[in-house]
Amino acid sequence: MSGTLQHDDASEFEPEGHEFDDDISYLYAKRAAISLLEELAKKIDERAIPEDVIATVADLLIASLDDESAWAQYAGEALRDDGMDPLTLSINRTWPIAVRGLTRLIVHGDGAPWYQRSRNALDRELARDDPAGSAAAVIGENSAVLLHFGGDWMDVSAVRVFGTEEGITTGQQIALTTALLGNQFNRPQFDLLRGPMMAAIASEDELTLGWRGQGSPLELVGRWIVIAYLIGHIEIDDPLMLGFFDSVAADTRGDVIGHIAWTNLHADTVDRDILDRIEHLWELRAQHVEQHPEDSAELKDFYWFISNGKHSSEWWLPRLVQAARLVPDLQTHGLIGKQLAEASVTDPALAFTAIQLLMHHDDGPGMGSYDLTEHALPTVLASALDSGQPALAREASELMNKLGAKNMVHLRDQVEAIRRGRA
Image 1 (cartoon, rainbow, N blue to C red):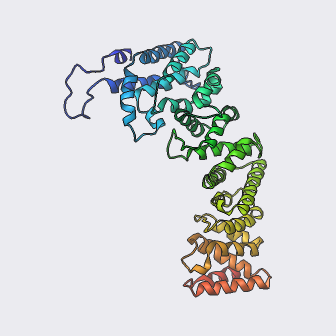
Image 2 (cartoon, rainbow, N blue to C red):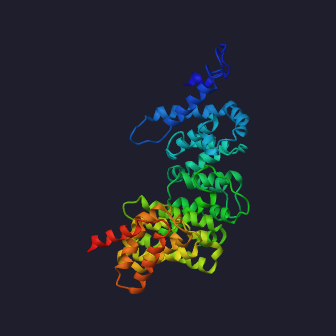
Image 3 (tube, helix red, strand yellow):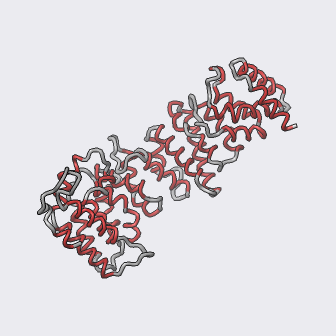
């Protein structure tokens, strides 16, 4: 390992074949060696590595960064790697891999014999001018473990790494967004990032992502803020809640609310306190949209509240009607038909109103979705016809006849089969 790292970059042998048939230098071998050292530096309790081995790893990693060649190679290539986001770049270039290795060494704690040297080396490397932002992404990715296990390094370095409420640079935006996406929500880190999150909300410029494809920067900020509210870490009138819901675009606010409801789909159970809070939040946002119809996109993903199966139909059915009235052409993405059919048994009138609003039946049989027409409509009509409410039954019969005249020729048979099955 040491021999590989100390070898000249250039090979003394003439490469054979084409460019990718043989390495034309030792740079790729050195990257592989640094990657192995970074892996060995991890603190993994289940795979105890002797302290003297990790000390050797630390020596090699720090020495590799004392040599300017890794930085020089990175600085020459990084700005040309315009297809990679900062985090992706950080796992594909030697210099940021070595920087990540330093973070691995630091999280062994301030009692480790290599701690101070690793910390000094990390501070030195972070002081470099890195427009591509891969080092910022590395710190963001590892910020939770650095905060919890890296001594006081993160507390001391937070302003430099993430910025403050007064503002955040591009590199700090990269660190912040990577931290929000690369780590599970935790209260200490949320508190550490309060100022930078407020700065992101207040920024009038487009923010830079550290890891693309997982949500916009402000969506990532919003997710953490809403989670903090849902678990009771902050309240509805917290400056971050107020700032996010007052300043950020309605479409982004809707993405955040929908994402949180979607995450509940994958949970076996959700505490009642959390459900109460997210229901209360949605109701407040619906009230806002009632007063500001131009913000209707905030309610666009309500279908996740139904699809996730964590809310009672007594709660979601009237809110579905409300959302369908407030959001033009509200989409349900084929995910609520069966739930709406089941809800029609207990509240046939409201279910009938909901399906009328969702299907836009006056537009013809191409309206709505297969899910609604096949999984909801026949049962909702049957429930309305059997409701014992003459006016409702008459409306249901008129709708069934209208849709039958528009080529839904089997609808009456479906409805009657459901009614016979209930008899």
